[in-house]
Length: 363
Image 1 (tube, helix red, strand yellow):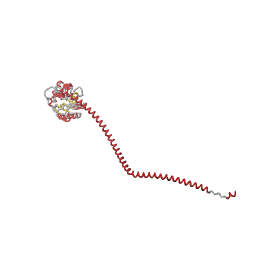
Image 2: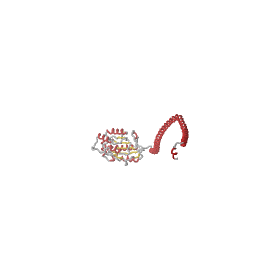
Image 3: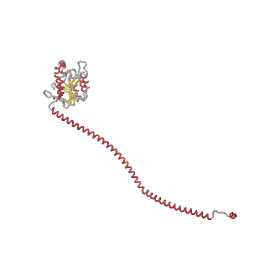
Image 4: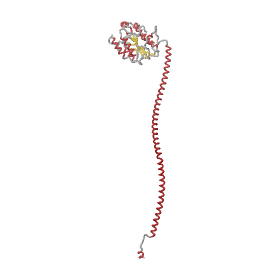
């Protein structure tokens, strides 16, 4: 046995082994073929779908290119229209804001005009009432002056004298020179009793002139009467303006002047300073005077005054007269003062007033 076993050789590649190996290889090949066939079938099916999609995309690209160009053009047009719409919207907003501002201004102007119209209507109503009142007063006062002036003849023959304005000031010279037309008689009358001084024809004529002027003051105006020599003061007790309808005050002013004897020198500068201090200022001045001033604000050092010194006092006084006030001068000429007429004529012309030197039988 041992010897037999020893002579027998062992072969691993026997028929059984080869059969097994062949069967296994065949099985492997079969499996591979089965798997490969399935994969190839799936790939072909996938490739077919992809090809269809590719063809579809190519078709869409071919047919969609013109549409894309048109769409792009439309997009550009839409963008341009949007930009134009935005610009128009901005312009519309700005125009709306401007119109709103104009409307606000127009509304404010309308309110102001309505208020102004209401004020104007109220003023018209007030003026109509005032006109009716003045008409009633005019009818009441028809045929007579503010105050009664006795005498004969027509005293309105002085033409060109404007007795008008809202506030009329009558200033009468009450210096000693108003006692007479000559220097000798002035000195003589100055030494007479006051009763004789008051009866001076020149002074009575000056007072009558004041009375005549007061009678011509318009009924809608106000007035005041000043007398002046070295100083200036109102004839009435009140410094304010008086209504022309107050005839009692007018008569009181005339009576006060008739009881005031002329005295002292003449200061035109103090008169014009007093006028400048009035509030409100007069808009018409009626000046009754007979000569150039003999002093300024203070009395002169010398008892005599030359013509040149009088003219210097006059020029200094002019500086104190407020502007834009017409001065109407009624001159009763004084002997020995030839420069007075020319100076007072220039004063009237420069201020827009009237100069006159009436006859001795006036008023």
